[in-house]
Each structure stands twice: as C-alpha cells, then as structure tokens.
Length: 146
Image (cartoon, rainbow, N blue to C red; front, side):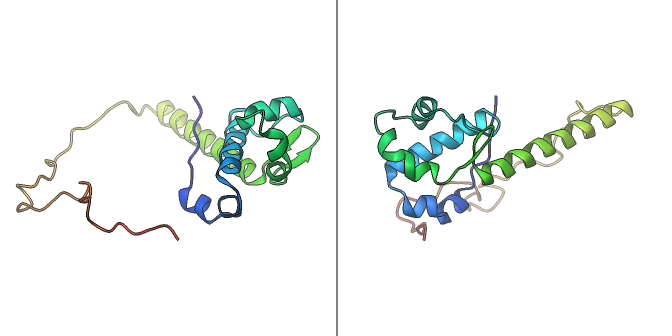
C-alpha cells in the first residue's frame, strides 16, 4: 500500500488551487495520485491520461490546462514537485530500513513496547476542563482559509 502526505496549506496556497475550477482540481489530483502509484512519471498516452484523470469525457477539454503543470521527458510526464516528494520519501524509507537493520544487527529488541507510566488526562483530573483534543462546540468560530 502506498501513501503520501497531502500538505493542505501548500495546496491551498498553490496556483493549482486558486486558478483551477473544481473539475480541474479533481482531475489534477487524480493525475497526481496516478503518478504517485506509478512511482513518478505518467505515460505519454492520451487514453491512459484520460482514464487516470477520472473523467475520460471531460479530458479533451481539461488536458491542455492540466498537462501544462507537468513536464514531458523521454519516460513520460513528470510533475516536478511530486518527483521531489517521491525522492524524499524513498530516501527516508531507505534510511529507516538501514536504521532498523543496524538496530537488529546490534541485538536491539525493536519489538519491545513499554507501558505508559502516567494515566491519561481526564476531565476529572483537570478540574472539569475539556481535554485539548475534544471537538470545539458548534457555535465556536473556527476561522477560515485565506
């Protein structure tokens, strides 16, 4: 199973978010998902791109605007930011694997789990105040994205 962090603040500040229609945003994000699953490049195949966009019927209308955000290389269509993120993700995974392998080679027991030494904070132990992770009330102003 593959996963990728979605940086909401970065997305909301991007020109893709501010300049695209909702339909374009959805197709664009579908293309980014497909590129992630493929490990980077999208194929230089219009039929495959149309399918990956999520709406093959809308693809002819959306293609020009969406593909302007990708770069064509010999192995397919690349998204430069996604390529950087995939590279960093691969590098981190390799570092974590090396760390785990070295720890197990040195006889460390990575599977050991210790029990917490403190009890969880409750309303009663905090004098009736809400816990920090409780949801805000419905009438509380949570602010807006800007």
